[in-house]
Image (tube, rainbow, N blue to C red):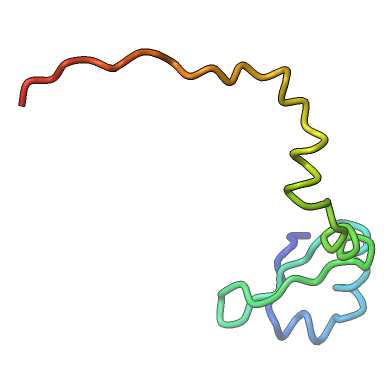
Length: 81
């Protein structure tokens, strides 16, 4: 089965929609042919909500010394306008 459900079918088969989201992953519900909502398992939701840390923490943990951060001395090419 596809992972997209029309709203009427999603309402009529809500229990099946929930089961599919648990077994197969997020399910898209459409209204008037356009994506309107996504139904996903609690596990998937919690993964999305889990904080991955902030940018400052990322920079502190990054091994920036392994990167070549020298600026190129190339001045580009001459262009006649």
